[in-house]
Image 1 (cartoon, rainbow, N blue to C red):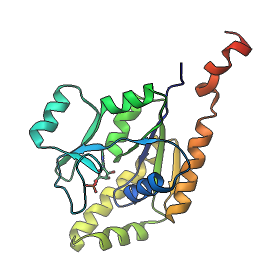
Image 2 (tube, helix red, strand yellow):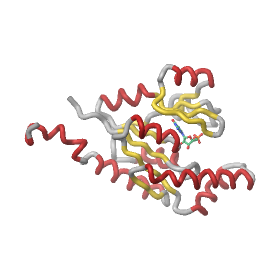
Image 3 (cartoon, helix red, strand yellow):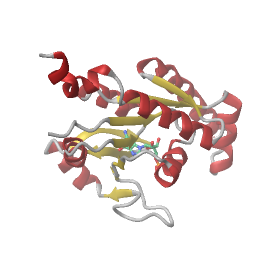
Image 4 (cartoon, rainbow, N blue to C red):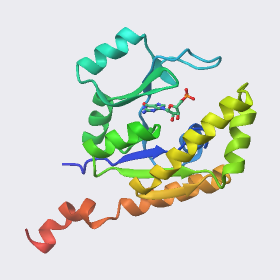
Length: 203
Ligand code: 5GP
């Protein structure tokens, strides 16, 4: 019997660069894991592919999934649903494969309730100025909207206390290296490996 895979939840405030770090991990990481593609009702952006970046679904389809208990977690973010399909996650974990989720903070707290043995990593901005710069540069938001998003981000940063690890996203390769270190160490936790040693130590 293989050991169950580990669930890794990468989360953090909006604008911190979770998506960029996740993509860098998928591309360069020496660590083996599968990424759980989320489902969303938002519009597909240029260059995005259905089934790769997200499963793009209608409101009705998403709500049907919720009704059928098909989601591990879900949240409404900027008027759209985002969520993690449960079946894929369970299949991979059962097969002994680690699964990475990249999700916003409300969803992460739902996962914490349902799968407390996951590893919860909070990606933080180096400071609020750099977060504001990111939010300003990436879109067409006016000053008022940016202020609102900053207020939201500050509240989200306070949620850091509910996570196991805080990783600062100063430079992407640094953040990736830290996350890899966390994953390696978590695999050595006695609680995770004890079953493999039962023969030696006796039950
Ligand atoms: P975007 O629209 O920019 O791709 O993503 C918006 C936000 O939704 C990001 O903070 C991203 O981390 C989050 N997100 C992506 N997938 C999921 C998901 O499955 N569940 C939750 N709760 N948030 C998600």
